[in-house]
Length: 259
Image (cartoon, rainbow, N blue to C red; front, side, top):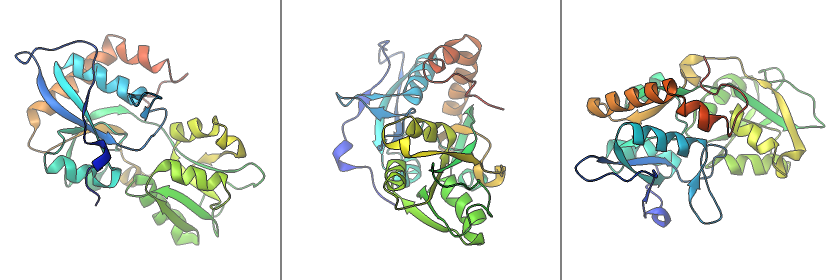
């Protein structure tokens, strides 16, 4: 497991509304230090922006939390939480049985299908048979790595692991892998980019909640029940008062909350 990136040790306070020390509980909000558009990515000035940043801002304001963004290497993000280097994870982390052995989660805050993309000039589908013999790129320590290994690796596909989703996408564009598996929204963002013009969506994988989880939630330490209650109440409130839909419409033309 990697430790928190040394180059990103400066925390950035999010949320436009100021909170006094008496009103707000300060929490370190961790997400992956690597760009993951449209959820999180640094802009030209180094400020983190994206749908998940706006979600975090909304729940922190609603829960009256003084949230400090603390970027963490993805493969070390759960150890960073359990060792109290961060206090919660808002990083597109799916709620899975395996992760629940170590940490707890809030209620889900979005849920989208898992997709497979590949070169436009190649015809195959998102099935074990369609991907047999192909090299599939996945981000390490993700549900996609676990799923691809279980379903596609067992049928003859080679699973190639990357530290970041961007690295997997770039190797696909360069022809070094045949396909990439990831969250459909993240893949859609890549396909709409200049580099993604090479490729298209081959389909969605068959769901397996035991591996892919039950949606994305805020990661919280098991002993932090009071924080979990605050986050759950905040998620419910921003869904009810329209805040969630307002910022989501800037990024998506469908209900990202899902089923």
